[in-house]
Image (cartoon, rainbow, N blue to C red; front, side, top):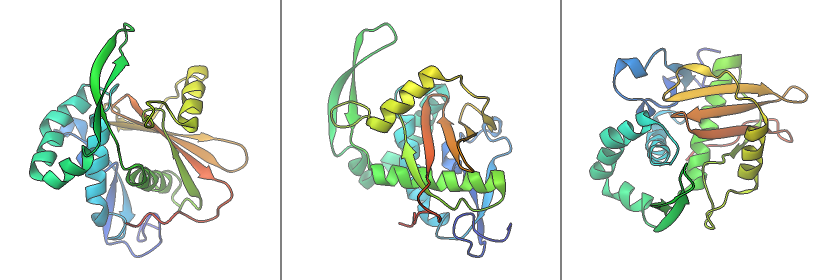
Length: 224
């Protein structure tokens, strides 16, 4: 199994970091024992631009920690200056909004439309990779991506986001796995039958849940 890709079973030609290395600051203290899985070219090297895009989205999100802000200063701004097309694509539909802070006061900020298909594709890739790392086999399910950290055009969470927020208020926070908690943590949670849910947390404040589509019996096609 160590010689085949974590998602498609093709011959290994490289290793995939989970998350991609661009999520981590360059200092060694933030890169302790990074998770890697065997990967083919299609599911690693050809997705680096997607990884960078999603890293930027998360680092610019409200509720993340000082590490995310440092990444924004050190790497996100540079990625936009190096690629005007990336900046134009990211901020093509930006608007001013007001949100409530911890003191229940309104603060002015801005919101921008993201490529949700691209975001979901990266999260699915991470889900498949973490499953392979944890269980040493391919996750033979299609995956559903949900988060309470992204809002729709009406500045509301979608139905899955609302459900997740409610569940988080009722449940105890689990003990996450991962040796770089300021950047990334994860936890597999058992559900009925043989299936599991994956909870991923980025920069201590951006949560993504990965649900198995129990009506499927093979991975989704996440190729570009």
